[in-house]
Image (tube, rainbow over all chains, first blue to last red; front, side, top):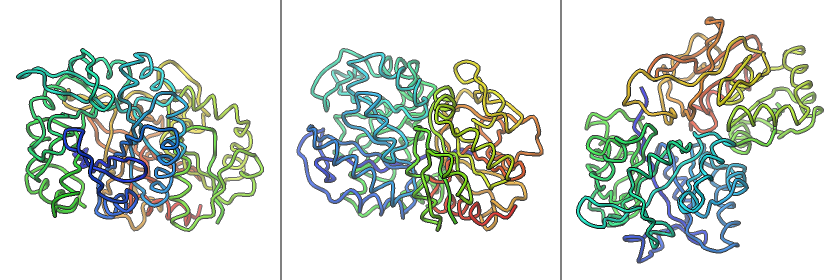
Amino acid sequence: MLKRRLIPCLLLKAGRCIKTIRFDSIRDVGNPITAARVYDAQGADELIFLDITASHEGRDTLLDLVTQTAEQCFMPLTVGGGVRTVADIRRLLAAGADKVSINTAAVENPNFISEAAAVFGSQCIVVAIDTRLRAAHDYEVFTYRATKPTGHRPVEWAQRMADSGAGEILITAVDRDGTMEGYDLELIQAVADAVTVPVIASGGCGTLQHLVEGVTLGHASAVAAASLFHFTDQSVIKAKSYMKSAGLDVRPA
Amino acid sequence: MTVAVVDYGMGNLRSVAKALEAVGARVSVSTKPEDLRTADRIVLPGQGAFRDCIANLRATGLVDALTQEVRQKGKPFLGICLGLQLLADVSYENGTFKGLGWLSGRVERLTVNDPRLKLPHIGWNDVEFQETPLAAGLKKNPIFYFDHSYHFVSDAPDLVAASCEYGGTFAAAIQQDNVFAVQFHPEKSQEVGLGLLRNFLNWKI
């Protein structure tokens, strides 16, 4: 039976691991390689690296981090941040990434996802969707670290991306990022139920029960968390054990 | 023990090489026929769409050396993911493409009988092995990492060395003489994956 996945998500800037609140108020939370090794040792199911360094030199720093991580951690690694071309994808995969996460470029170049899926296969193309709540029950897709509205609605956008060849959707509620108030279950469930590809829930996880809710109420195939591991004494091991005792089929840590 | 990891420009060669090194292999990432000739074992990794993978593999000019070393000389061989699918007679991934034809069978899209099951099949799933030295010392029904939408359908069911359930049963591993090939990613399956790679290095045909 396919297991529900628990995925620590590391936000990177200039080679450091950081954490934001609603994509703002950056705090340094450590060395990403050290963090990745700990998550690996604890039996995390995958890792996500999202890099927000907006410079050319930043790209080499990221590739170096991916290389070092892949040398030490024999677990699946998804890497995103500034992925805009087939060459960008090829470089990340060659460095040791298994999947790439594409966000802004998917909105700006509608053919990019189908082009990438044709070359690398859907199984390696994750489309990341950042959303903000406009009004009650009304969400909008944003790009450029959630600063630019796109006019797209997340459910329709996720469906379109899956039809274009995305193999997975990483859906983030920006309003919940770093708040530890729990996933936006209305958003997660709407997207998860609307697409035939796996959906990773992201944004807001602050307790072990939130992880369970992401699956049982949000219908997500995988749950991502950052603050939970950075700022509480919860570990991947405890989280897996909690999810299992709640009746979820997870891989033992 | 020297292992040649066949480099045809597709996918996660580095991860495969590093995982093999972690279990004691000396790895050469190979683009030249002589690397395949001098290696003790050969690994064909793969990630990507079948069309591009088979085209790139043929373009390297390594197919002849690969066939000679593995099929004629009987060198132990491990195919991973697309490295399994490329061995088929034919793949139906986005068209019809001829494979290497080492394994009699075809590559088809996974069909799931339950609408709640998502595709691609991404994540960790239980694998049930038949009696094989490649699974020696692994715990019963070990859990491996998968990431695929297509799977190999063998014309010879007795070659299926391991199976997996996802909306139906599919071949997770194939063993034919000195050829072992897996649909999952041992290089990404932490301890259990390294265990399988260690078994590959110790495999006596």
